Amino acid sequence: MGKINKTVIITGYHCNNRCQFCIAADKRQLHNKTTEEIVAEMIDARKRNRTYLELIGGELTVRQDAIYLIKFAKKLGFEFIAMATNGRMLSYKDFAKKLIGAGITDLIFSIHGHNAKLHDALTQSPGSFRQLMQGLENVRKLRLKRIGSNTTIVKQNYRYLPEIGKLLLENDIKNAEFIFADPTYGGVYNNFTKLMPRISDAAAYIHKCLDLVNDRDDIPHWHIRYVPLCYFRGYENRISELYEKKTFHTEHLAPDFQNFDVENSRLGISREKPQKCKVCKYYNLCEGIWKEYLRHYGDKELTPVVN
Ligand code: SF4
Image (cartoon, rainbow, N blue to C red):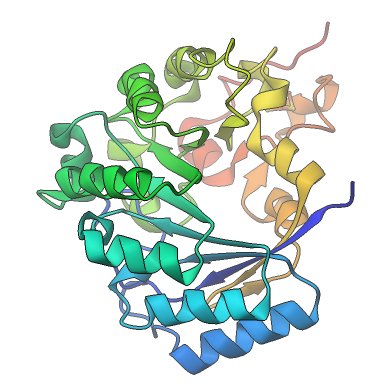
């Protein structure tokens, strides 16, 4: 099977949460794309035979034109129309109904804690967990089939990853992505020591969370993103970047940048394999670790795999 051509349109960075680790923390005031700009990008993407559209922000659901954009994407014939969301607006049943009626095929909820105390502290938005859970319940009742999740792993939540994983399973999420925080820009760059966990501390908890679905044939995707492979021997089939390289050819169209080869450009720009990695048997598969991580913590935690 050929790769799926995926276009990710970043519509702007306005948002109703204020996540501490947000990669776009310093971009919130940048230009939000207009409806016409997004429509033009969708038309162009279809002309280039893109079949998978993902709309992300900021938070798309706070835009007045959110429903219109989904309807327009459906009319253009995208096979998949996905949206990442903090889920708060979906707590309004009427809005959830309209969004699903417009033709969204995939909703990816950002879930950063297993309870309100942890999630709301990370989003810096009291009430955001309660609204997120209500939003999830609404879309489940509306029988949307493809419900996914993103969880950003930071110092404050890594110990609770197994509990977060259980919460996802209780909510019928079968497509989960756990993301080791990206310190290249934004919140984690600005507050590195406060937020960035050490991989040597977090790995055991990530393993426990991944292991929750070892015997579940009905879970198609339960993956970890942005980690060095030396901590994930035996989990090679659960590494997002490896899956992505096999499955997608992705482009990112943002207000402030465009990247037409996402899978192949990360290494070299923001991630690095230090000198010691040269002898590692994973060298060709692995993307190493964030450059910014190495700048703060050094490479002592990385252990080349030689047997
Ligand atoms: S290449 Fe480097 S970072 Fe990757 S698994 Fe090997 S030692 Fe770890």
